[in-house]
Image (tube, rainbow, N blue to C red; front, side, top):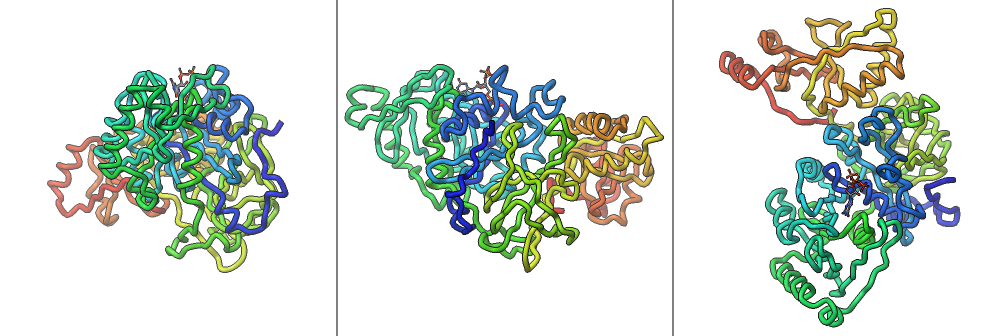
Length: 538
Ligand code: G4P
């Protein structure tokens, strides 16, 4: 049975601008355990994609469909892979892109965020802003992505709503604009005051949140009478918010300066409808995307898309490789032959799919904002552009992050050195790992580099199981990394506590065992041009 809902023929028009206008493409960002999987289920449930919560993700029975593509994920219980979920809601098409749930995978998350028009920042009401939330929010700010904040788990004891709003303002400089306001404290949740119409929406526990929660609406007068003190307090707080200028300002939201805030409980499906409504009402639809020269590619121009993620091993039965691409302009029709901007070669899109958990459906058409999974796309790498027609277009490549962890790789089977090289090259193309070369270590001992150390486990496992080329990794003791501004200075950078490593894109890195070694070298040789760069565009 197909779990995604295909758009019916009747829904389809050939007008990409109209189709784009009814699309909302977003991702949920959160610290692990804030309830991202639960919210994903609840959103899909609301849109009635699935009849019962638990079919998308679900722990111990509730979890398991999306996140068991790789055996490593199963054993570690984390989600490494990403999926895109599409569903219809009130004549709109919602594309929800899944971001990896582990703190290690910030590069992957960054790539997913390059493909969305909006993000939902999910907070645990008891914890507020957590390290990963802050990091992810920084990415959104950097890319100018508008953020909606959903304060989750209000059904259990947590912090004060006003205090959480202050935290948004003070710690990340995002002006909160609560659209709903909780009635009753976290843990004794009575419902929300809908600040848009002044009504009370009553909260009722459902058994396990398995069905869409019934909503009880009451006028303000009725709520004052029936809810009493809690209602009184909520209305007073809401008036305070209005006085301090925290009402909805759509332009400030679009500029990513202010965030609509909603309160709810994903596990109880409460507040989820509000979230969908805010997405429809205020979140930006796909619009023109700047190409590598900064010229906007209008959505009504011929088909174009860029690859934001490459994934292998999603189907244990077949060794496959799927390139996930976001459509930026025009209409995608399965089978169309596009041009690969990097190589100028033709690329056939016969095998295009939508992914939802392990379920796949062939995608026949797609429009700006949609995600297509191109199967067996060995020619496609992260950041690549596909397009049809003239003129040629190329979107900016994905930023390369400066790695923070390093290990030397050696094959344990010298008879398979060709597979060793090929395997590593493929993993680099997929964006799993960075490959660095050291003049002193030679070709047979490349240095692998990553932002998060878990990438090394992925490499070890995939080299063995997929490329049948087992390798040994020796972690290097470097903790401080600098970009070398003048590669002519490389000779000065070889010391007992540092070395120089080169990346294929021409970047030269100097790596040091610790901050003190770097500082003392710089004191000795002040002419050294060392730069601290977190990420740049390839
Ligand atoms: P993640 O994807 O962000 O890592 O979080 P996930 O949805 O797996 O949720 C983490 C835990 O928080 C789960 O509990 C989940 O049930 C719980 N949770 C999510 N939303 C809410 C909410 O609105 N209210 C409450 N009270 N809990 C919520 P768990 O004990 O780890 O798993 P489970 O056995 O309960 O599923």
